[in-house]
Amino acid sequence: MDRRAFLLALASLSTWRAGVAQADVETVEFAPVLPGRKLTFPVDHGAHPDFRTEWWYATGWLNLPDGTPLGFQSTFFRVRTGIGEDNPSAFAPRQLILAHAALADPRLGRLRHEQRAARVGFGRTGFETGRTNVWIGDWRLEQREGGYQAEVRGEDFSYALALMPDGPPMLNGDAGFSAKSPQAGHASYYYSRPQLKVSGWVTLNGQRQEVTGLAWLDHEWSSELLHASAQGWDWIGLNLTDGSALMAFRLRGKDGTPLWSAATFRQPGSRVQALPPEVIGFTSVRRWRSPRTAISYPVEWRVRIGERQLHLIPLIDDQELDSRRTTSAIYWEGAVRVEEGGSEIGRGYLEMTGYGEKIRLG
Image 1 (cartoon, helix red, strand yellow):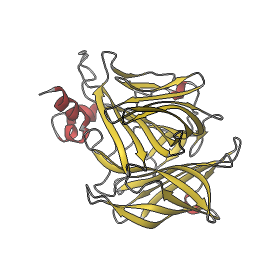
Image 2 (image 1 turned 60 degrees about the vertical axis):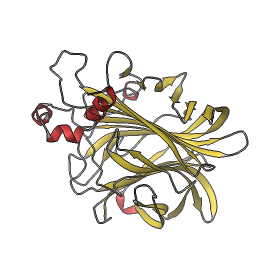
Image 3 (image 1 turned 90 degrees about the vertical axis):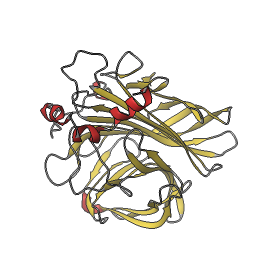
Image 4 (image 1 turned 45 degrees about the vertical axis):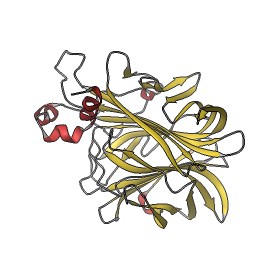
């Protein structure tokens, strides 16, 4: 088996569980997600290797010197496989790092994106506890000088971006305990860093250009599987021009019926409010069909948050990311403008999963 095929096999967790590794996975005790645990910083910025899955998700808008906007994504997933934990070999795939990177370029009309997957070991791939630092080769997301540094070097594009927060982490759900269904057992620990000021550079078509912008970072970890009825989710992270920020998501059933919703609103400054499911609504306005996968995505939305009605409009329709080589998923992750009453009031990112095959998590 060559190296690429080996890495792809490691990434296909569902395949392992269906095969000989099933017994090994079932004997592993992943750390539980329990209400009442207080998130503590800086330690909770780092990895939590006792849990099954974890991700750091940076997304945002960039501006080129000529004013052209770009969307960017830099995502790192850590996966505890439950395989080989008693095996002393450095080759045992106890922990994996998977990574996605993308730029949404309206001049191109689609995403530029790349992905990587590797087992942790030998210093080339890894993570730290106690602070954010996760990497695969020369791809990295790391806390530096009070902020974060996101670095990606690919064949089609590269970037190095400094992300500086404007305040403390925004704890989602009940002080960072984020329920994913009405039943106990479906939850994660989850916080966001909205309104991140961005500076750095991108390289496109061999040309390096300075950029500035605004970004959002999510850090979430869990050992729980999604509710069996969940087909996928819709998620937004929005930086509003008055300094406020909104995170909202909903889980959907196979027929599109909402199963569970949650939202967090941070007012200008630092006051944070967790919103109940009944005040949150997602309504599709317009759909787009991918010419590659034939999956139809609702790329334009109206989102109800209490009395407010927000209109989400994509930077470009084609922001589909095919990550079947790493996370076995095809999803839409894209830059969106936010309008209210016909005026633009912010920008952010929209993620949609499960519009093709059912999403598999954990």
